[in-house]
Image (cartoon, rainbow, N blue to C red):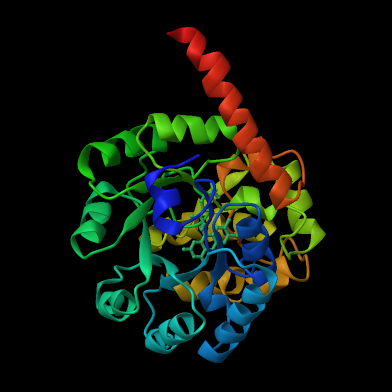
Length: 323
Ligand SMILES: Cc1cc2nc3c(=O)[nH]c(=O)nc-3n(C[C@H](O)[C@H](O)[C@H](O)COP(=O)(O)O)c2cc1C
């Protein structure tokens, strides 16, 4: 299965695992890469550049295949020491970085001088074009369906992907709502060169998260996500729970006057408690609508192989019979 993205990243299948806070540890990244996809370590889950260096070393022990590191550029006052994180990435021999959040422009010289391929995740065509103009090698186009931060435009992938295909010259991965062979074939039909999955990869054997998280995804339907923090223009798609209901009540009551401090208890520092301790109602955690399509907990190898095999059957049988 050769596409512009498999060639760019030197991987077997055009299937990528996006960075996920307190999910994207070495165990998952290596399992996805060993299965022929592109696994990703989430940079900022590591408290320091030194910790990231250790996580990269661990991943290098677990796989000899390419893997990526995600760097999310947050709109915070006390920004993490990004140049030090990038230094750890370079010294660890990582050749692919997934950037997200703000534009990676400031860090492009450091990344490009080290020969790193940059795939920037964005939720609009204008941001994708900007990424292309500053030298990103590829983009990951995240539709409104996605788990995490879908931006503020609310354009689903049935529109966003063909729009991206019409405008972009660099290759792009379809992201958000991707779960199986149908997702991959549809994404490719709309012009993508592969797909990026978040939520689907949490419900795998190797994802190093509490069993409660995997079961919550299995039990959820496509109706069970909510958008929080919209009034703060920091919209996040999360799985509904008691904390999310409290956030939405506060958003309703306080309207435009709401401040981050009003919901800090439900959003700050909750990821380790959810992902590692399995405390499912403690706060808001990202989850895609795609939870409605997830009904099992395979290994990454089983998942990737199934997607590839069924995609081939879909193209060779169902679609061929149409022409
Ligand atoms: C639990 C969780 C945590 C995430 N954390 C991050 C993150 O730290 N940085 C980032 O760029 N994207 C993050 N994402 C987004 C994913 O990388 C990916 O773009 C998204 O999940 C795709 O949508 P899907 O869940 O429908 O597959 C997260 C997603 C989930 C589900």
